[in-house]
Image 1 (cartoon, rainbow, N blue to C red):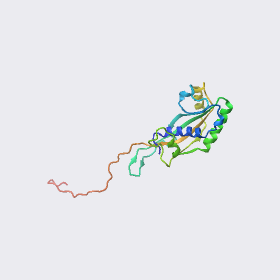
Image 2: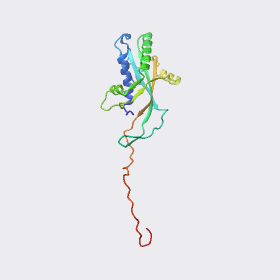
Image 3: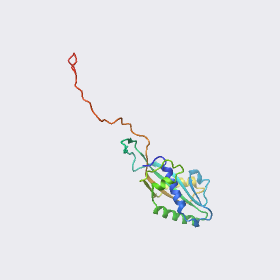
Image 4: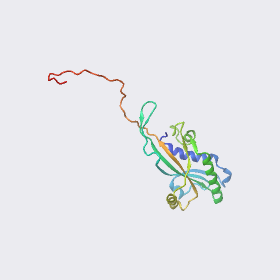
Length: 203
């Protein structure tokens, strides 16, 4: 399971993968690859390149309540928190046709590289002292259509600078707890005693 750094690691990794492999000859100027906040669509930082916005984080519908896990040392960890991410990736270009060519490349590239291993996920973070994912973990990117209310809601907020974008999801990202269940010491022996008769005749 991943720790609290996992959400940032997923976003930075996808953006870094796109930066490392995108067709640079498609851009009219030096491209920019930026992790966006919602306000950035109103004052865009990117005119040529790609932006990535994590626009929704919600509890996973597939696993609403997980069970505590037993570690190899016997301790029981508090249940993990499973979340789903919704990620909006946008190709930016001055010409609509180039923007659509880049969007087509993006979709094909992410489909071909939908499974992202921990080795990549842990490299993308600015702070790497603690890995976000365990070595045997991975995430899967899913191309997912945005619902009409969500699409219209985002368009209403970003209409001044709305660009054709692609929505991806990462499901069941399990955020591991740092707390453990206090179970008390293990019982390793039992003691039995023989009762004594008191002066009143009761044991």
